[in-house]
Image (cartoon, rainbow, N blue to C red; front, side, top):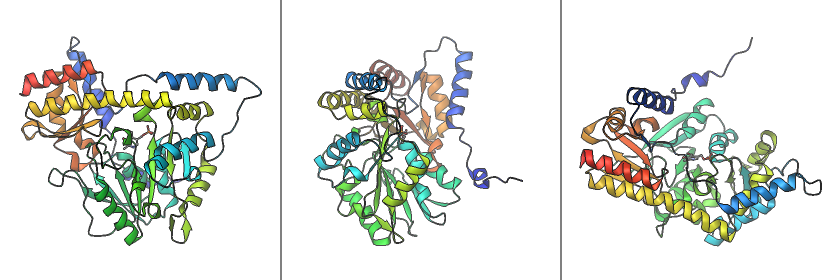
Length: 394
Ligand code: PLP
């Protein structure tokens, strides 16, 4: 008789987005005239740009021609894409990352959930609190112990070194949900800590394109000796709008060794066994992101969302809220008004302003009392949401 993985019973139920949807539906039914503005989910709203669409069309045509048809992709991804990534995302920034250290995937969610498989189940895991839930849930499913690094207003929503040394450390900057960023000097301390203790950092750089401030690292490999302790995750979702198309990549440096084993070898084995690669046409679309036109268009998309984040940040500050994030990140993190808890504030904002956000408690205990708004709406809706919030709270 089959038994099941009982670790799944230890997962906290993910009520967050379904609870939000239920509450919104109920509200909409009771108030059919309500004009609601959605600023909760982390999905992008602008369509794919011309260069991406052009590359997709061309690749689709190639697939219909016997001469240019492609079947299974190479395990690590196509060289045309990996070489562009190595050059533009790393070498141009002075980071030493080679194309054969890049594993193309269908996104950072899968990679951030799967990467734990190459580590033993008795490793201890450190995550920030609040946190992107995938890091926690994937490790709970595997039966690992989780250590929470409390990120509070007092410490500027930055993790501090724990008393007991963790084996795996998940860091995400610019951060989801708080929008906080880390300086190169601070990140270097984590790299030094990991190298000193033999830990590995899983560095999630999904929002790297939102960094506009000098001195904020786009990659952990900008830090000295990071190749000896860090794996880095990237996504094409939030910069190029690939949330529906699906593309990302993971960097595992060839010299990163733990327990006598090169981690690149383990991840290559895992990738080859369990994964068939992102579709050819999507990898061609990814290549277009690095063309001159593509890069310009994508900067325009990110600028658009950053402008919204700025509108939210300044508007809410003027309305008297305690706010952070929102400058090198699409997320604005705010303290709920009148010491309300996250869900009370959710209801209040819905009723008072018709604005839907995400309760901070959905990202862990450390998010209680906070709320996340995103810059992913249209300019018009963002301005209107801020106007309504100011009208009610200022
Ligand atoms: N990492 C973080 C921190 C995220 O917030 C998200 C998406 O919201 C992802 C990874 C997932 O990215 P992708 O769409 O590439 O799977």
